[in-house]
Image 1: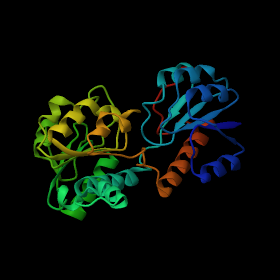
Image 2: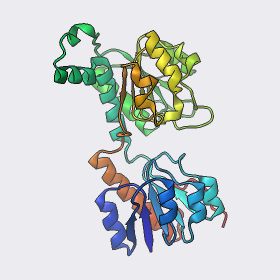
Image 3: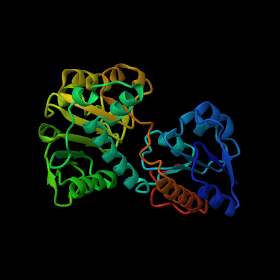
Length: 312
């Protein structure tokens, strides 16, 4: 049997596959045109944020399972997979702490202008200490949007390390660990110095950060997005930054052209290339989890993280 690995995973995953008698096949490029060429003859797929298209599902001939190396599976066409009788599973929770930790780093980078200071120092520029305003995190208020494992982890980190007031907006969460729950996004935005997004991409969350919601934010707030690019209307965010309504933003997810477009031109946005779950520790945990689900699926069992119902 063969497993197509669309994007790199930790070597321990390769070893687990080989030990199970499955040949790991590295895809030379994660674009779907290449995947379509490589998929015939493969029994399983492991993908990350490249996803898996309907066309790739149609091109498959032996494929039984698609494993998402991480939690988010919106980039996988689950309808097409179901039509072909292909099971789709994700690997939630394995990178949560790493994403939460990155969010802390991005918050501090915004409030203390760390990237700008580094660039200025390297360029020999003077006056950045006087030009920018620097803000402490301790004692401020954070709004956590989405109370899954990542949002919850961040909330506890910010409370423990910085004694922050933690507000939670998460309509689906049954409880919020004793923190203050706000009943609407707008209520939280009006109070928060830091806004951090950790909610899945759903019809009701698409463009939740837009002109209307940004107008409700506390002036000078900082926005962090380590969840999904589609949660934020980037044009509206750029306008809010230029007006001063938002003082800075840090995005680990964004549209393809954002780092060279209007958002970048504001001078107050940090872009990171989807680094949230890419620590060595998280990559190892996700590889082990991904291959574990894959082996279970190929043995005829249904992993507990399956997200679709194959029709065949």
